[in-house]
Every structure is written in C-alpha cells, then in structure tokens.
Image 1 (cartoon, helix red, strand yellow):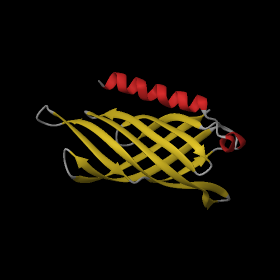
Image 2 (cartoon, one colour; image 1 turned 180 degrees about the horizontal axis):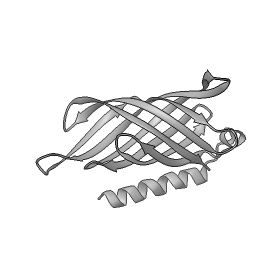
Image 3 (spheres, helix red, strand yellow; image 1 turned 180 degrees about the vertical axis):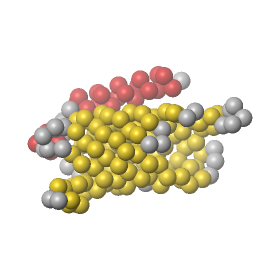
Image 4 (cartoon, one colour; image 1 turned 60 degrees about the vertical axis):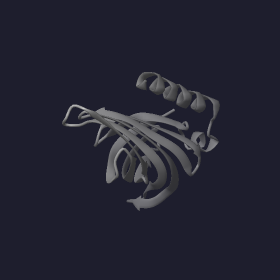
Length: 160
C-alpha cells in the first residue's frame, strides 16, 4: 500500500513543480522546487515548493529505528527577519500534519496521526541554489494515541 502511495505523491509533487513556476523564486536565483535530506529524528528526504514569495509547502519522508515518518506543512515565511553579521536568515512558521508507523516492543506496529506547528530558520545561499534549515515542530497526536511530541529537523535542499 505504501509503495503506490509514495509513487503517487512523488509524481504529484514533480508534476506540480513542472506546471507552475514561481517568478519570485526564479528572480531570487533559484527555482521553486527544493529536494534534499533531513537529519535528526528519523533521517530521510525533504521537499519544498515555494509558490509565493512568503508561502511554501514542505514535507518529509523519513525512516529509521523501526519507524516510517511522513509530514506535510503549509509554511508562512518572513524573509530576512533575523540578521547575523549582515546575512539575512528567514523565519518560518506553519501548520501541518504527520503520520508515523512505528514498531513497538511487542513486535506489533502502531500508526499515529497528528497535527504539527513547525517553527524554523532557513538560509538560502546567494550563489548556489541551496537552502539550509532547522526546525522544531510541536505536534499533538490525535489518532491511535493521545500524546504531545516535538519533531526536530535539520537539513538542506537543492532548488531547481
């Protein structure tokens, strides 16, 4: 079941990025679609689509330590809100969801579904279409259990 869903999701994201171009992102020196890696927590793939100067959709597909993790967020970006030695760093916040399938100690798996509120910092390099980011995302698990967790992510994406 997961295989065809992942293929469909990847095909949909690639088709949307091919159909829509973001003139603001192109003017900034990079395309609107970013693909990269995410570290911390489960490690895996990260993608972002900047569809407006201050809005984007981001997601992660990660695995490790007996778990499979998928998240998708709508983000609002405040460009260059933080300055460090004259270098502008973007601050973003958003609303999204997370799905996790994890193995329990009794050899059964558990699926959880929840809401996320990501907050993070990102930096787009000027000369190469590369973004580095770090985020904290408090999440409330609503399905299959009730708990509060904080997702942590650090990663990078190449934009095209």
